[in-house]
Length: 202
Image (cartoon, rainbow, N blue to C red; front, side):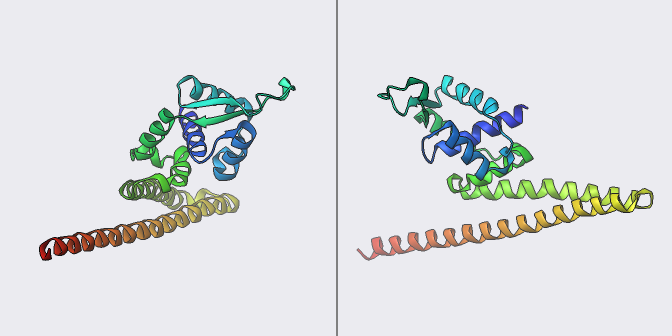
């Protein structure tokens, strides 16, 4: 539960870093962007929002303060400077938790706010995690194939195929990230050389 709660908080901060939103909009974004939260209820979301407000990471404001219909008050949540700072720290974290099942999809959705080296490290960590699972499943399948019925074998093979697909996908992502990082590095080196030449010639 602690990991899921941390994942939900990160997701909320990530969504609000783009635009303020009221509860319904926020839940809709969480469901559409993060499949992890396709079953989230307002009963789970609002305690998280309350906690973030109490800690000064987001603020809540009445979207229609002049409305005569007070029961129709719609609260809009906005990221604070402290919340933006907290999000920055969380996005910069490249520890093992970043590639856990609970957090990986959220971290990847925030890659546009993440430094290149951190992105690569997270993707490599996720690949290692999936390769470990793949190796374990292959070993279990090899040892117990004779004892499994046809349907269980099909289920095991389905899981094996899914893990292999994810490893291939991660390999492609890592290759693109590394190529992009190298291109950026070469570009920066060229700029430095050009600046040095300009200074020398002047």
